[in-house]
Length: 113
Length: 119
Image (cartoon, rainbow over all chains, first blue to last red; front, top):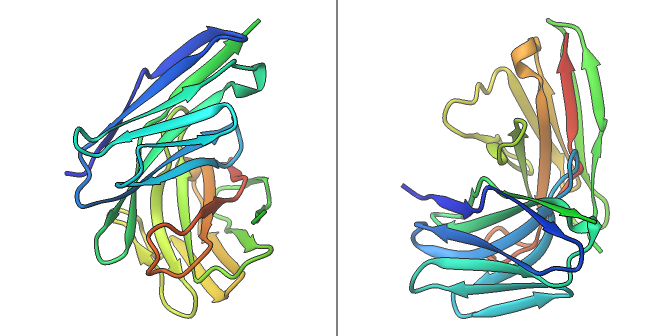
């Protein structure tokens, strides 16, 4: 069964600190992996998308890594800001007669003063 | 950048009535749109895939007669919750693929969701 598991489930950090969110997946055949940021009561916004051949991709203070061999990805947030408080969702795409997405349950990040 | 507009952002309706939610791609043509529902502190759950000009494909366990999907144009898909009940109260989100269905790396843009409350 295709699954995407994220950890930690929730995280509280102080403003200015860095943090790393984890995503492990069992999806096969793997197509790509996306990280989204979802503010409360809003739709998800894309941060990065990586194919199996990409190891890392950055978007401002967000850096995603991918290890297709171990089926793990991480999202590193540098110099966190209060506005980074949101749910971060890992989404893995499998190519099954079309592009099917499997959503992780998300990591709820709270950045405090 | 690409924008997906979802309307209304919130709606309150009485039990037994129907509610229509619109999802529009504003600056690109979306041959495929997706509808999700999301319960508090849970991730998005795909309800159905909407392809322009054809019938929607529903996920297992989703009642197609209750959640009517229409994708009549390349920029508009609608979800109608028929005979709504309190258990249908949820956050409904649409997304649209910016690119051909055959391209597995096509960006996926999400609307801002619709909060449905059925009283």
